[in-house]
Image (cartoon, rainbow, N blue to C red; front, side, top):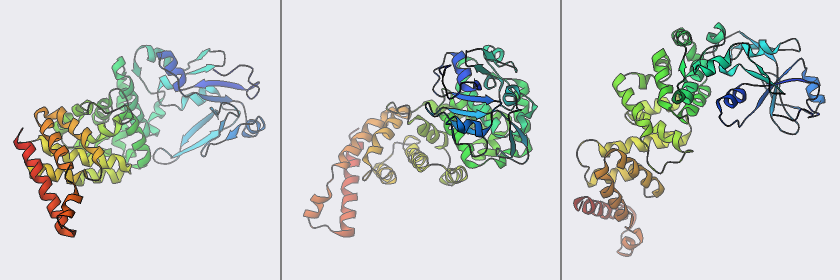
Length: 379
C-alpha cells in the first residue's frame, strides 16, 4: 500500500478498492491498485499535483506512483447499455454509496490505508464461500455485468467459485430484456478477450449460453448445442508451442473453426475484431479441413499452403502443423515433410530454365505439388 506519510494524500480520506482488495485476500498477485477518495473535490486533487484523466467521471493519477484515484461517486440509469448512466461525484458521496454501484460483492470491498477492511455488502463472506453475487438489484441496470460475471467465473471456477442462483436469475433477466444489443462492440470484445486469457475460458461462454446472452452476442455459436460443446472442448487443445501471450488468439480461432467463412466474418465485423484474430481464425479453419475425412492429397495440401500464404509467411506453417498433430497425429509428420520439400523449390532455378511470368508461376506450382505428392506418398 502507499506510504501513510505520502504528502500527496496526507489528510485525504483514501481507500484501496476493488480487485486489489479481492486478489490480496485470495492470495493472488496484486498488479494494479485503484483508490477511492471520499470528501474531496477535483480542484483539491489538482492542487495536490494529481493529473485528471477521467473522461466520464473524476479520476486522477498520483503525481509520483501514477496509480488511479477516483472521487467517490454514484450512478443513475439514464439510457441504454453500458454508457447509459448519469454519474454524480461530490464530497457528500460516502464510501458505502460508491461501493454499492459495483457489480459483485467480492469487488465491493475496500481497505483503509492501514489495511482495515471495509465490507458493507458481505464480499469477504462470499469470497470465502466461493460465490459470485451481485451487490444490489441495480445489477440489471448495466448489461456489461453479464459478461463481467461470466468472465470472473472463468477466472475463478477452478478454485470452486460459482454464480449465486439469484445473480444467475438477474443475468437471465438482462439477457431477455434486449439491453445486450446496446453494448458497444469494443466493450463486448474487451471482456471476451480477457475471458480467453483466463484459466477456464470455456466457462465464460457456457455461462453466457446458460443465461441466454450468447444467443444475443454470438448467435452463430449458440445455434447448435452439440457444435458449441465441441467448440468449448477445443479451447484447451492448442499447439504445444503456443505461449501465454498467444493463447487468447488460438483459443478464439479454435472456438470458431467449425463455422463457415460467412459466419466468421459476420462475427469479426460485429465485434470489430483485431486483424490478428481474424487472420488466425481463417488459417485454423483452413487447417481443419486437412484432418477431417480422408487423407488429404497433394492438391489439398497445396491449396492449404496457398490459403495460409505459406510461401510469403512461412512462420505460419509450424504452429498449424502442431495443431494438426493435436487432432490427427499420423498426418503431422508427412505434412511437415511435404512443406519442407515444397519450400525448397527455388523460383530462381526455374527462371534459369527460361520460365517467366505466368509460365513461371505454373511451373512453380507443378514442382511444389510434385514434391508434396512424393512426401505424402512415402508416408
